[in-house]
Image (tube, rainbow, N blue to C red):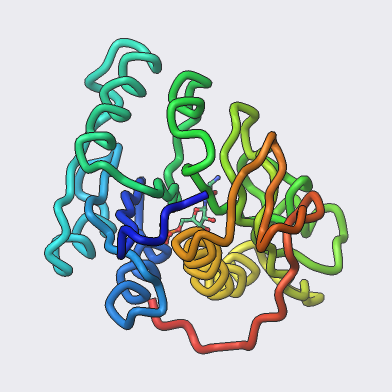
Length: 227
Ligand code: GAR
């Protein structure tokens, strides 16, 4: 369990793109709804908007291009070393679009979390919103989960469900889900930062209670999108 005597938790955020989830962490740390500091942002792609967001918030930001490495294992090792140089308590995958090796995942097991834009275990992988629409689902959503070696297969921490409307396109649904992501992801991180959340023998424990497979399902109030 996280040692609360240490003050603010050190958070490293990994991105590959726009970084709107990263922004929700930056904002949460700034208004202290999140008892942490984003101490570094690492992107595997140069020039993405998330890096600008980090720079604007005066957060060290690093590009580590996976194309500069011969193998996935070499990239993951270099990435892990950069992460460790910031001594993080929590590593947050926020739209980080790389499959990670088991060696990487196991190095950070229990302090590595991800957000995925579906109600896992439904629709791991890509094109989640289109797949929900094609399947005729009545709802979509997002899941925050601990990362394990199985792609999008780690145990859930928190989910938000979003009603799928009759004429929704994948873009419509993605945009509504994203607004909910910005609420549940910092919330899950805050539970971690408060020492209330842990991965124990492959299961998620919140306030000493085992969570169901997908995690807690929270009711989210509609907010206008600010990111
Ligand atoms: C988010 O919708 C996130 O759930 C998704 O990428 C988007 C990143 O947006 N992640 C995945 O699909 C990971 N499998 P952002 O860069 O604006 O935070």
